Amino acid sequence: MALGIGAIWALQPVINAGLARSTGPLMASTISFLIGSLLLIISVAIYHCFAKEPFNFAVLSQVNPIYYMGGAIGAAVVLGMTTIIPKLGAGGVLSAAITGQLIMAAVIDHFGLLGAPRIALNSLRLIGIILLLIGVNLVIYR
Image 1 (tube, rainbow, N blue to C red):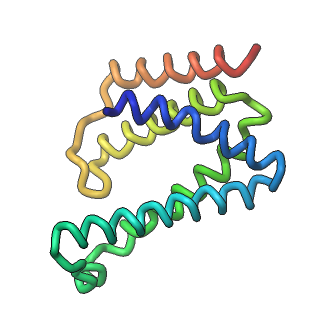
Image 2 (image 1 turned 60 degrees about the vertical axis):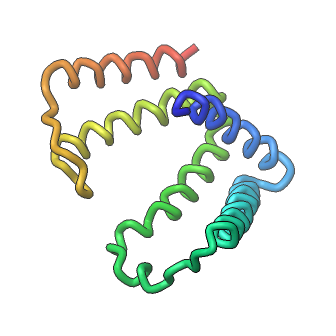
């Protein structure tokens, strides 16, 4: 499933960049999020209709506010990728983005941020990060 998501994810910034050629990066990102939001709202409504369980809005007040930042991060990612694709291409943007994700994941693991289990940054992981950075440079620089 994760491989399939990764494959589909490679299409998203290219599709959004194509839309941006006609509408601009900000509008393309907005359209992308609007369509995604509408599909998710419809999915939640259908799920709760068939599950016959109402959504408990009270739980929303109990959530740590930091966890609501996911949507803002997603918007920044979509806008950033939509803007950068014409400059670096899909391979360059996605290799850099995935490397950035893995570096941040290593930091999150090392410090156990946001409730993640602590996994120390050891020499092997550090070598892996260095190799990722070298790989990104090989993909980006022609």
